Length: 471
Ligand code: C5P
Ligand code: C5P
Ligand code: ZN
Image (cartoon, rainbow, N blue to C red; front, side, top):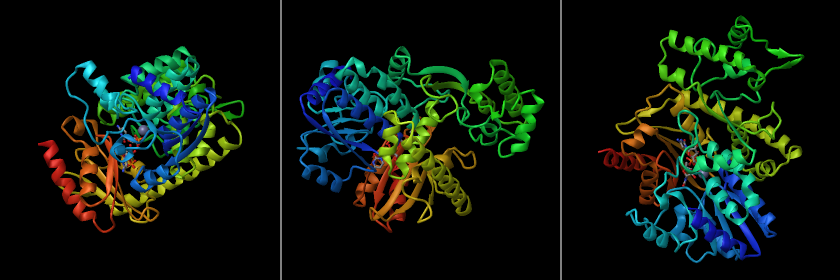
């Protein structure tokens, strides 16, 4: 991949003006920010555009704009055959459409194939694009090839990978992501630690981290603030320092150890699986250059902030924050986050009220007009991870998409299902195509747009396709 990154870097450096087209989520926003900064440092002129999906009509628009060069980040590989004749480079990690690379491990063979297209994608090198490197990661490899100075941008690649849920169950980044992590640690922009995997460590008071814990659920504590406060008091953990609430990163090592061992005991005593106790602890990534009590201090929270921008079509606000704004745009992003969290709570309540329907090979629900198409994927993932439904079946979720005149579909699976043969990218792309729509993504998470009123037909196709994959 490094060699290919250099080739793409040479192409980019030979241009004067580059138009960046990126996906509007945390990984896409960090990808665009890496490309933007690398181009700026190379003295190029650059423009940026964020999109939800690269469909035929979008490709047509881009074609008509006649850019000297387009840099697609965190998208493009799924539409490779439609991009013929567009003067572009692609740094992506979605499953590519069109020709598969030679399957033999012959390096020369693979390289000569890969060098015929200006695309950097882990799938071409036998790597797992859902786990080993993200869109921001592939973009970083090119930025790194453009100049050694861009090594600091590895921080953004870490946020992108974490935002795309590429970490393993123990929180660790693996594969190519691990190399990028090494860069970021060498550069002093990221630190890795073994700590708790609970969410909100940097920006929430400790009692709120416990109260809002959902993965894993903390028996007797999740959802009950006064119990959380009592729990901390009983264990001699002061809640405040002077007049401020303490957050997790303010705690002493011994205090953390006390809390975690008490939590583990509680989980086991209540008969929850030992797996839940184990998943409390893992590798986390923090940013020493950011202020401690803010969302920007830890990769998980930073990426949530960016996703909040993306979901409401404010990718550029997220990009300003990635590029260093800690003022006006950070405030805007925080406002979007509050709205995002409220939307998600409403959507989850709605799914609870309608229920999830099970079929033989999958389960599904329809968000109709009650769940915005921009968050349906996030909601589907949260429902599958909620512990309230069967994780033995992949989940499909529909939402009306007025803007795009169709039905948005999101699907999410588990590692266990993928190990058994499930490939949601193929399911989505084949079944949507059959109805005149389009889809794609990763084996474990994929999306599609299908024509209105065809949901049942789509589900029939999905059932057959999954059956054939899992046989
Ligand atoms: O388009 P993109 O590649 O950026 O997004 C990847 C999507 O896959 C994200 O929505 C992420 O939450 C989802 N995902 C998942 N579970 C995984 C890996 C990715 O839900 N294990
Ligand atoms: O939209 P959703 O979050 O469900 O998408 C899951 C994954 O599938 C993301 O990585 C997204 O970029 C990808 N996707 C795609 N083509 C589509 C729709 C989604 O590659 N038409
Ligand atoms: Zn991505």
